[in-house]
Length: 318
Image 1 (cartoon, helix red, strand yellow):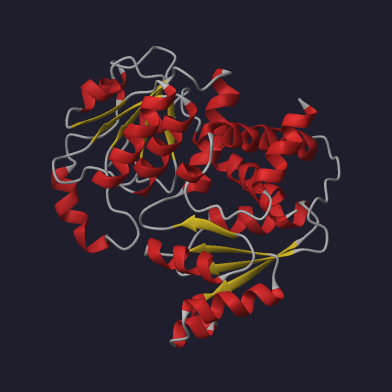
Image 2 (cartoon, one colour):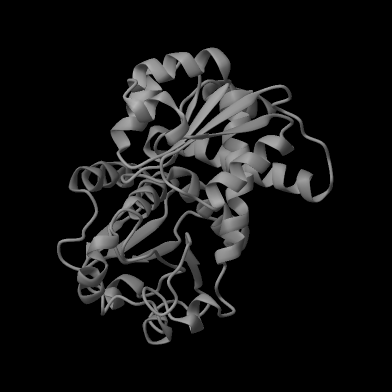
């Protein structure tokens, strides 16, 4: 086992963390187990300064609660420092190329985390940087949240393989990251969206190919009841993500029958658990009775952002 862990550690060192599809099943399990180990150390008060003296630059073009706090606290707990970099304060906000920014920051920092809109920006930053780049969120993918989610499911259920997750709502960055991770980890996933709001077709095809290798199933449908049937996990997200505020009213109409509530939850397994990446709009995508109910684990997810991201940083920046 020690040899396997050393092999995994070596394979992850210096890598970018852009999308879960870039990693093997074994590498994702290694990160999940490392997150759980670091979580236990933190709870026990054990010092674990794996990144002593290192600095993570955190570029924010989208505002955040969980991402900023968890990365900054995570770096502190790992013995390093997180440096907040607003895009308004950088030359990148005044026209400097992403390549030049990446090259310059690579001379100062040990890693870069960026939370932005267009996924191409993260890809370009990673191409230009000579240090690891972490995708803190783009419109296409949210891999840090998804890794924390799989850690949470593993802690609650004791396994990932063979479980069924039902995702209800917009085929957005969360749907993309969850389906890619589920396929790699052997979980089954059903995604129910209104017509016209399905996940990216290219990513669906890529996910289907990965699912064929692990024996998992991915189903895209337009019926929430079909998706939720016999589900171990019910997951949802806001109907209008950051940057889509102008579509709020239009989306409220399109998603009217896609609320996760007690009636819909009856189709899942009795011991299902409810997940949401937050922030949530109670009374819209989910009823208060579900999100604040006994089977909701939303704040376990939120906490695990800290531990999962510490695992990512420890693995790729150490």
